[in-house]
Length: 193
Image 1: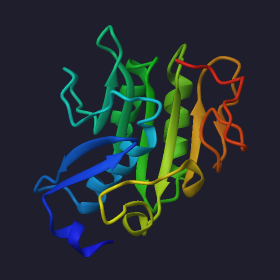
Image 2: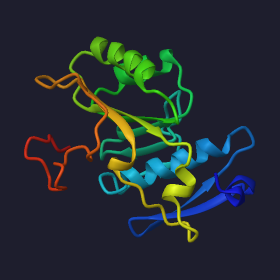
Image 3: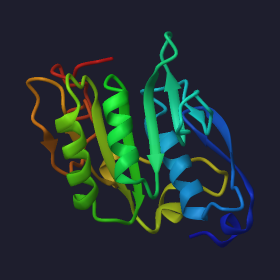
């Protein structure tokens, strides 16, 4: 990890023509803050209204969130350690919310099992759940010296668990962006929110 990043308590990153400030709290590790920034950059094209660490009136505070016009989370990003009870509660309570769970250089299979159980018990779930493993050299690979984040789906190990009716429950670790074909064009079968 870039040494100068480790020492800072406030980091400014850019992606997709936008800029965001990420504050490292005393109890947070540098990897957690970097994952927030990377997930922000990864989902910014699909969710341009992403907010960082904003209270939404729920027991839990998402690391990243975008609200829909009714005040319900449309996208919710959780990074690092997340307990099974929290996962089950969120997936059951927010059936129309696209979730993304990010881990730092971790095998996704154990988390996938927990999420598949939660999705299986959530009746009428209408949104996917993405699991992402960020490589340990993420700072060096994806963040330029100017703070610009350049990250793409084919740089990551990830999977999508889809509880929507008529969908395959698990899409194995892929190397293309969700909803896009390998040639980068939009897939016709993608259910857009």
